[in-house]
Image (cartoon, rainbow, N blue to C red):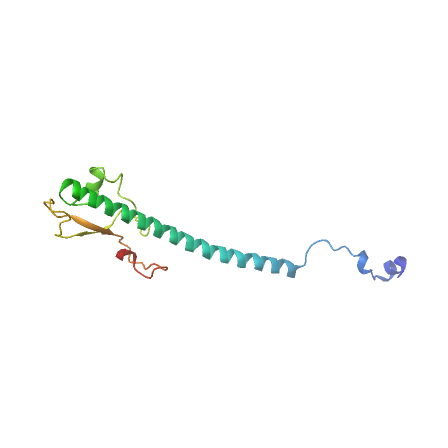
Amino acid sequence: MNLNFAKRSGVVPRVARNNHGFTMMELMVVIAIILVLIGMAAGRYEKSVVRAREAVLKQDLQTMRSAIQQFTLDKAAGPQSLDDLVSAGYLREVPTDPMTRAREWHTDSDNVLLSVDQTSPGITDVHSTSDTVSPFENTPYSSW
């Protein structure tokens, strides 16, 4: 095809067109793919945050239970509150419950003595105050 004829007739050969940029459809497909990937990443992020909070909860419970036992064995009396553990130096501070984000814990006080030398009962166990059920273990956090 003669280029002069193409210019006069309004027909421009395919090679001569200026194809700079993307079509709207191409941009929409790319944006849709990006949104799907972001959605998948957000779901995984949420799961990892929940798992991290559960790990912190388990560690805090283990630390407080150990401090309760040590306090009871050392003082021959159970602590009357978690603040007793802090004032006696068994804990630096009462940890924040990662599920409720509060410093409130459910404590169990029984008349059970942990040792023969123990003179008075006190706190024997501690639990989270959250009744939310763990998505991974299918048990409420308050039962841990």
